[in-house]
Image (cartoon, rainbow, N blue to C red; front, side):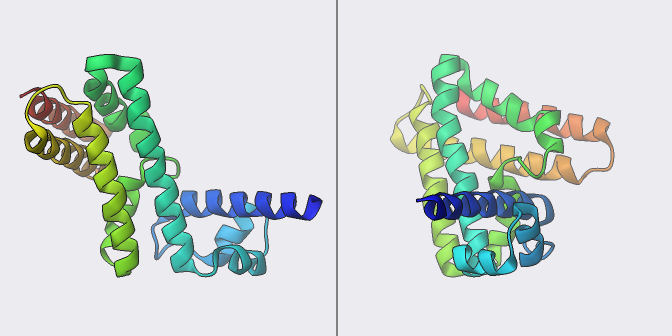
Length: 191
């Protein structure tokens, strides 16, 4: 029993370390040994639990997108009809912009998904459809097709703006990008 608990703890530590590493350093900047060390495990344990760097990336991607899938209904429940604004303000906020290791997987991992396997891209698409479906369900105006289009636009604006703001050298310019994107994203969902 202790061995099973230890294995589960090691797996969780490896998954968490992989998620943080891929989000903060990208696929090419992340190594197996670094993930193992961050998790307090050996490289052998990494391969025993995650199989490969590609599989670790896929695991990190799924973990990160599941966080968004859990967060959206929470925002909807806590903020009622004002949830899109609360979510967008958090998403584009300075704290989220600066925390790459724990920030959103949609922004951090999408560039690497573009170059990933068909299996990984399919996983990404499936999860993103779930996320936009949750967003669309939380919008008050439009038919199903219109709400789905608004959800994709809303999310795309947030992801693009966060990516751009994170890349800028000036915090003042990052704030301007975030403010402009916030306005655009909220305008889309309000129609």
